[in-house]
Image (cartoon, rainbow, N blue to C red):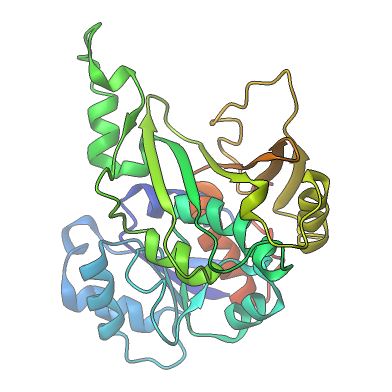
Length: 313
């Protein structure tokens, strides 16, 4: 039985990971009493005792935690932003290709993808690999997420119960208006784009779920592009046999709800629009495939377990 430690288990990501692991017979959760949760020495002991340690911490604290690990056998799965583009770290999205999966299976350091970035990367990476998009393409990305992605503080803000009729929390709120967002480096680095996309995230008044949209004009595609059906075919081939990726078509009449994948750990990709103006759409739970679900998937691969063990597909 493998021993698992969640450093930062009291946060939204840590709680969901613990929920996914609590009933499993192949792992044992190591925990600290509440009074020692922030005790550096106690955390260090647990990190080095664990076969696998999840880091559900702010970036600086995640870097500090990595420095505390002296046991060469300990596998670290970091859910923070700290190591997603760091040398020597695996990017925890195995469906992107065999090399990604093999790195997670064999490696000791895996960075869980960011929530918004997961949708963008899932949509753009296969097209660049297939030659349908050039690496110098100028991309845009629009993304809406539930408030649970903002952590305990934002959850408390939205669920306070003291809302008024004119409360701005009732409407979607766009942010990162200065085009500086912590997910941009991985969105560029993992896809291989020469420039970061123009990124427009928004948070709305519902708890879980995310919808990431990448709009494209036919003129942005490479010379190999013919029609929208070609993109759908590209996704179907790239993600063939992947239990946690579903492929669909966005057709009229339709309203695509951003919380449709709430509570699930899979991601749904769809192609909409027409041959001239395309919409690439990813829907998933920001705490599922966008955080905790992806982390547990990486754990399963690291342990040699069934990839979907403990997950809700």
